Each structure stands twice: as structure tokens, then as C-alpha cells.
Length: 128
Image 1: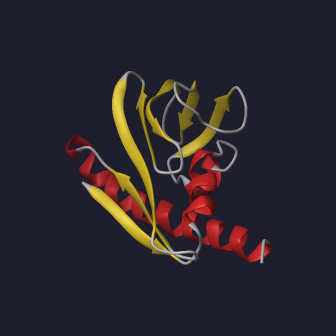
Image 2: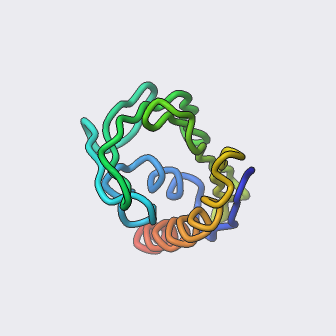
Image 3: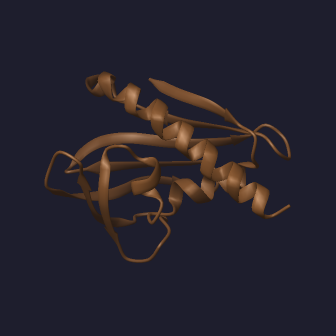
């Protein structure tokens, strides 16, 4: 189930927010801490994430299409996918795919997309 949002910022800015592990605690309502070698995700990236309600869980990026899509497994379980598509020079669509077994998580994804939107717009504004 894809939850999406139109953002008034270039796709490259949105993508950078999504793959920057130092921003996850600011836009991800369920993420309280992240450990990852390096700042940005890439193909096969691995690390650990702690949710606000649980212990540290290992994660691994399972699919990575630069500038467009990344998916991951958290605690060995397929988790969300994150997608960006360009809608022109200054607009894009960002989306989070939620597995059916985690349907209630859609509400948190809506909050995450609002935060991603604000962060990407701020980044775009700073570069004009």
C-alpha cells in the first residue's frame, strides 16, 4: 500500500533526505536512533535501528535504485519501501510502501511524509 505526497522540491533533495541516516530520527516518527557506517545509504547498506517502542534491530537495504527507490529488511522482516519520482524541475512525489501486515503504520507514514516534505523544501530553499 503506497502512501504518497507531492513535494514542492526537486526529487534530488527529497532523495537525499530519504537516504541520509542522520535525518531519520527527524522525519521517522517510529525511529529513535540509527547506527550505520557512513551517513548515506547505498546498495546493501547494513546497520541497526531502534524504534521508539523496542530494542535495537538490524537492518539491511535489499533494493537500491539510485535517486528513485530503496527497500529494506528490519529484524529480518521485509519492511517499508521508499520512492521518489520527479514531477519537474521543482516538484516531486515521495512515497512509502507499507506491507499489508503493517496497515496501521500508514498513519505514521503520513506524518513522515509531511516531515520529509518540510525538510526537502528547506533544503531546496537554501540552495536557491
